[in-house]
Image 1 (cartoon, rainbow over the protein chains, first blue to last red):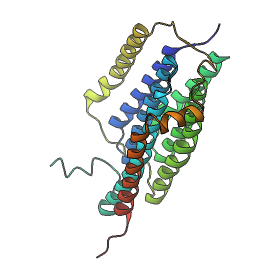
Image 2 (image 1 turned 90 degrees about the vertical axis):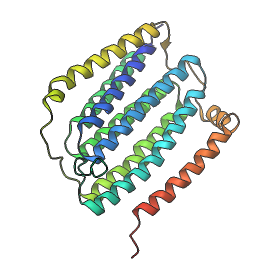
Image 3 (image 1 turned 45 degrees about the vertical axis):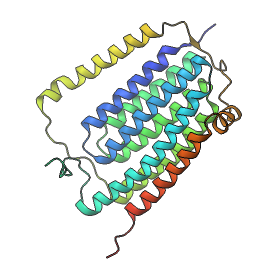
Image 4 (image 1 turned 45 degrees about the horizontal axis):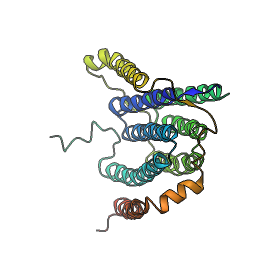
Length: 102
Length: 166
């Protein structure tokens, strides 16, 4: 019987996660950094659902569902924070928002 | 058939994922991210997660990305200014990324030798019925807690984004 090896799904998930990490580190626009985080969350969701398939249980789906909910909450609050920062600083570059570092 | 579908949508996901990182304009990144999420929804369907495939399209590709695009438009975000990076990052970044990926692939292959094969329809426990039953019996407490979290997030977003009253 033909089918896709389970490890391919996990490797795809690892590739997407690595892309998210590199975007998170390399990019300077705060919105793109935020989108890289969403990309990482999606990669983890794919892993959860793949393992859910392997063990033939629905628990991975539930975890994935909760990750989605938390991602939605995080997006709402994070974008509100970005809006506030932009109102006060008039910049979207994360190098210019470094007063907590100094 | 499974292999063909997987390869097509995995390729779309990876290409769009590279595009998310490579594009300098945020709106191009956002559109690419929608591509990633759409192809991941198809992969969820192949894995038997019907409810989550629908939720992925509605919640992620619909609601969250609309929020992103709306913010990009509202802030009139332009293309990112390129700045010089340290030579270590330029020299080692890409090789280290590929080394990390190779290591991950090796571990995954070692941990999960190709005994398990994914067939479309091999797992039928991901219907809304099963997910709902698990959510409202075994995971009832986390579900209620997460609803409080959503409420807090709504309040936080409203408080953060409102106009300052003098």
